[in-house]
Image: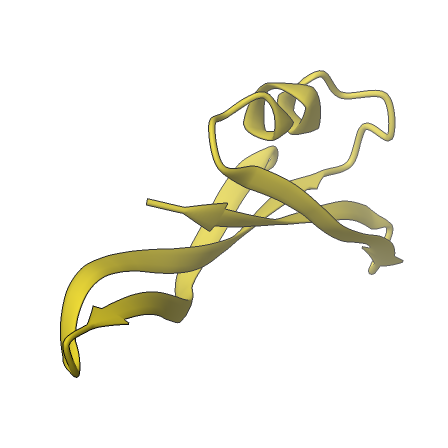
Amino acid sequence: MRYPCIVYNRDNDKVDHADNKPYSRKIRYQVTVIDPNPDSDLPAKIAALPLCAFDRSYTAENLNHDSYKLFF
């Protein structure tokens, strides 16, 4: 991988039911920004997306990881 990068994977989905049938479904993704720069503006841009929520931040192998939950 080349840094900075964005890694995402399908995490979960939210299904609303009515009359015992699903009528609305939203897929949730885990989006992780990986960047060697701790002051990068990329995490702020991801956080500004609609239906996005901050999950956690951590450092691994001298890389900063900012993880978000994003419904689409």
